[in-house]
Image (cartoon, rainbow, N blue to C red; front, side, top):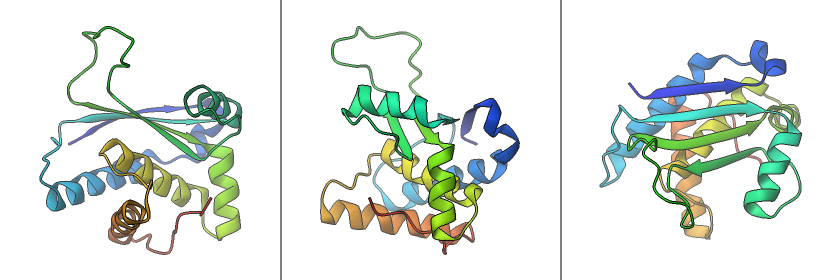
Length: 165
């Protein structure tokens, strides 16, 4: 089973149920392995962080040049080109998914579902990025959204749709 290292900021710990997030990423990994030539090991790991708007805004500014909060960011476990290889980089660690709880909560309210369901969607979205999916072209976006929706249907959350930005 894939290991998920949860890092949930104190104000949000009582609002997050880790089990549905664990299941969502397992389903996404299984679907990915069924439909791709790649075979990502179920022994892989990811870190899932749920944080506040200030933290994600700073990360968004530092890594994407956008000085505003966003709903989710993903960071693959690859060394930066200007940094030496670090022994601690685990081959099985896929990367980190960072979710802003306040943004997720606002999106959930606007869409009419729970914040937990929105966080599941954002976790799946971020995880698909770690697996190489992107929405940088209409074709890639359609493929990513279709895969994401199939995972959500399998979880019984087919009604939860991504917010277009």
